[in-house]
Length: 186
Image (cartoon, rainbow, N blue to C red; front, side):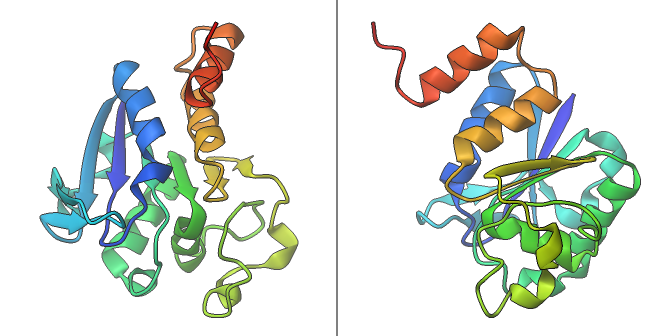
């Protein structure tokens, strides 16, 4: 199984760090893609990506993961929107957290699907979203989409892990939650 993380300048690294860790230790190959060879995250870390977006073939991956961050100016970036549409057309998993759900809306794949986001009420992004489909849940799984509020990054990672069947059983899943919530101390 292979996961593709789309990264961009200003992406919020902590929203995807637990998920990328969980996938890596589960034996899922993680690759990164961007519009340029390297990006700078919200914490000012420079990251060199594996692929440029135009080299991505969705057939090579099982899931597309997009972290939150400032959606502008990428909401009009055709290469990104086309990759999102291609994953959706192939019914592959797409996981987007926080502001990244704006990309899904801009790609016109949220129609008639429940979703979670952190930016639906921000004036510059509200027009992308149909309020009747906004979920009140921190994390929403609808068809092949997994969306989440930005502050629900552990719950987001767990939801993605469940859908990809990376947990041995319910006990393994709960132990993972307790680990990330720092509640395993005895």
